[in-house]
Image (cartoon, rainbow, N blue to C red):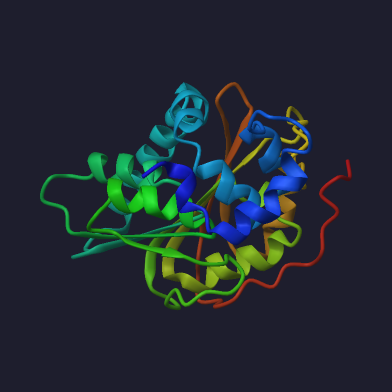
Length: 248
């Protein structure tokens, strides 16, 4: 079965006039995904050849490896956990969780969870991670358990969202008190891609997350990516004030 058949027919029918027009060739996934809609990401993650050649490229894998190393540090610092519970929100095709799984000690006990709103992405992730719990769902409204995960990951996702503060509330809700939330976004000082909605620099992103709890922020990959670790205290739900991420 070809990957495009993972996209429901009604979605393909809705995409066709918008994306193809009078052209005979298929639209570029990188152009389609700029729409930031569920339909666009369904199409994007169904393109096997594009994903292999362009999406899972060296810089992205390098970022996953950076996040995996930082995650291991956080897990070790937690100490005394019989089973480590990790959730990747916006998990895509599962490579981040797979790299983390490979980085954990052989005798580690862990539960891996992933959430993405593109079914085509989750179908690929399920093949890569057959023992993980992987769900199609909305970052804003889902059935992930409250106060459950020791580590919550959210990579290269918030910059696509119209209401990122609501997404961070989800991340805080599902993280257990004493756990950690690790978020990456592009550095807005160097990012100008049309498909992104939010463009935070380091100080703006720190301000945006200031109500969520103590955080540490670093720049990696030649200062193109912001990596932030939030430590969740006893405050259960994140209620940030509105921030204009385009301001200086």
